[in-house]
Image (cartoon, rainbow, N blue to C red; front, side, top):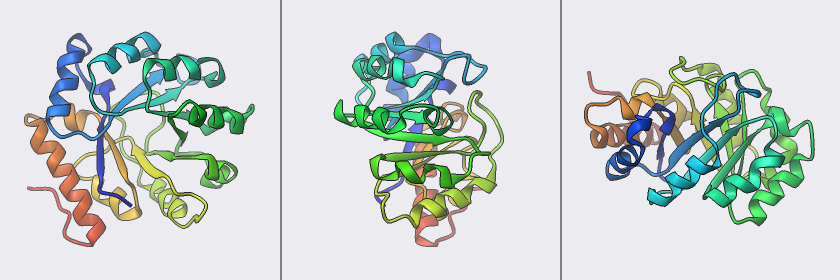
Amino acid sequence: MGPPRIAPSLLACDFARLGDEIARVEAGGADWLHVDVMDGHFVPNLTIGPPVVAAIHKVATLPLDVHLMISDPWRYADAFLDAGADVLTVHLEVIERGDGHGLLQKIRARGARAGLALNPDAAIERVAPYLPALDLVLVMSVFAGFGGQKFMPEVLGKVRWLRQRPEFRGDIEMDGGIGLTTVAACAEAGTDVFVAGTAVFGAPDVPARIAELRRIAAEARRGGPAHPPR
């Protein structure tokens, strides 16, 4: 595992000031930018499409971690890759309905990292056939579709399971309810990348918050105290 990486979720930013918000978290020490794409079909919410991702790509300097919560990633993968996705993650619950292996191979062939996400109620064993083709597994600690949900600690066993799979050499990412009180448990289980929305964008001091999340995660990995300040 490399050092803990913090990926602020742009879903929690002020979209009226999107460029400024990106600059704020980049200057604050973020590692990736997490971009949530929702289609109103696979999940009941709607967010952004390829034109907005392309606009983000024009002003961002960090990797774009694009999470497709959509029902037809085969149709739209190329558009998001053209828009500048560096990591393109699709949902297990979707790709099991079609040629999942072909989709993951296409993402990699286009030069991006291929990710697979699964909701809290999906058994982790279902990702096993795809592991050799994956650069990232995104373990959802809330149900996909809305921000601000409460962290579900029962998913930590999925991270531990992934860490024991020799055929998987990619990153493990956690998304949902990540903050000062939950990041340590995720790190102890073996998480590499931490998606944080309101915990970052809602902080009064963004650089301090990102640094604190990273410190807690690093200490938890080392077996140290890893406690947030009181």
